[in-house]
Image (tube, rainbow, N blue to C red; front, side, top):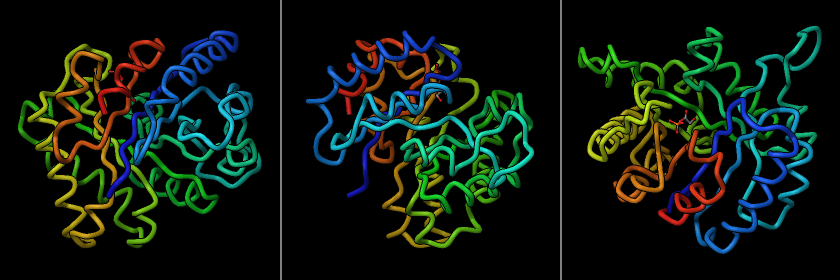
Length: 253
Ligand code: 13P
């Protein structure tokens, strides 16, 4: 049975003090909710990773993730953070290819394939994001674009490597807009992604891949979204910044 995950993407929010408070609250509130095959991941800003991995500790189904990493091993790349730096502070996973990175930092499929490789080489689980902008959805090109994003970044992987990552479908028009994809729209795209994986690998491999939905997930809509057969949890932005809201979403899985 594939894993179910609720991940909170804090993006560029919170001071260290606020981050400590939020992580402590979340740990306390969701501890009893994360059982069976459910995991909770907090994707926090780089400066807080070392401290929050310690705060969360081991032996829990809650973990801490980064929001990006470099495609390079090490060296003269001022301002960058490498995969080995992340693992050295206890990080287990990393978001790659978030639409904000694609949009504001020019990240494309070719670069993301490299980032996926280096993350996996160091034992990190990539949380690979894909999703279409509004104009592409409106011109009915969303399925083709998302399939292409998946191909460009992932189709060079072996089946064994593919099974060691998580995919997040995040329609750009639903991110931070309060506009959520309907459960049907989410389910349809998740099924398209899974079918595409099955066509390249196998149905058995595709059936093992956790596919999260992201884009204005809230306590009010999480249940309906998570009830879809191909939606295996969520990547939550704004609503992950409040412990109560995030806990309600975790309870919906
Ligand atoms: P919102 O939940 O704020 O729309 O953000 C979604 C997102 O980008 C998660 O990575």
